[in-house]
Image 1: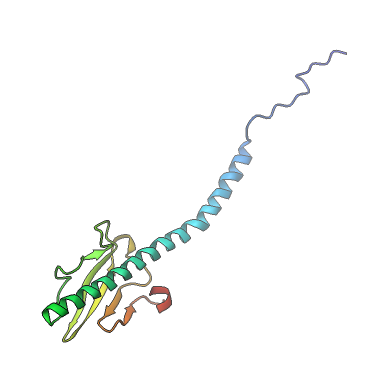
Image 2: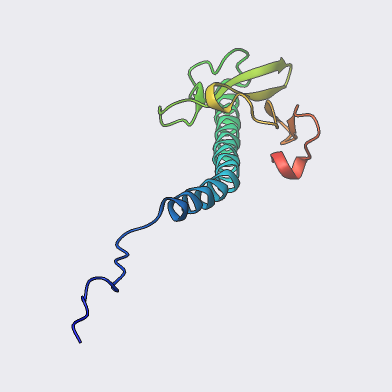
Amino acid sequence: MNINKHSKKCLHDGFTLIELMITVAIIGILVSIAYPSYQSSIMKSRRVDAQGALMGFANAMERYYTVNNSYPSAGTTGIYAPSSPVDGSTPYYQLSIAIPIAGGYQLQAVPIGAQATDQCGTLTLDQTGLRGFNGAGMTSVDCW
C-alpha cells in the first residue's frame, strides 16, 4: 500500500482574508467606542488644570492686594501666567481678569486651541470663591 503522504495532508499556514477582515472590523468597533471616551478624558484633565490655574491666579490676586491694597485690573498684569497650563507648554486656556470691580475681581479661563470645543465653555472665579461657567446644558458638577 503506497499512499502518497502529501495528497491527504492539508496545509493551513496563515490566516484567510475573511479572518483578517473580521479582526480588522472588531478592532475598528473597539476604537470607535474607546476614542471618544479618551478625548473626553483629555478635555476633562485640561479643564481641571485650568481650574487649578484659576485658583493659583486668585491666590496671586490676594497677594497683590495684601501688598498694594488694591486689585490689579487688566490681563494677568504680570502677577500670574497668562495661560493654562502655567508651565509654558501648549496653552489650552487663556487666563485674564474678566471684570475688574471696586474691591473685587472676576477671573476667567477661556478655552482656546484644541480645548475650544469644551462644553463647559469659559470658567470663572471671583474674589468670594464663586465658581462659574457658560456652557449650555452642563452642570456645576460637570464643569467644576
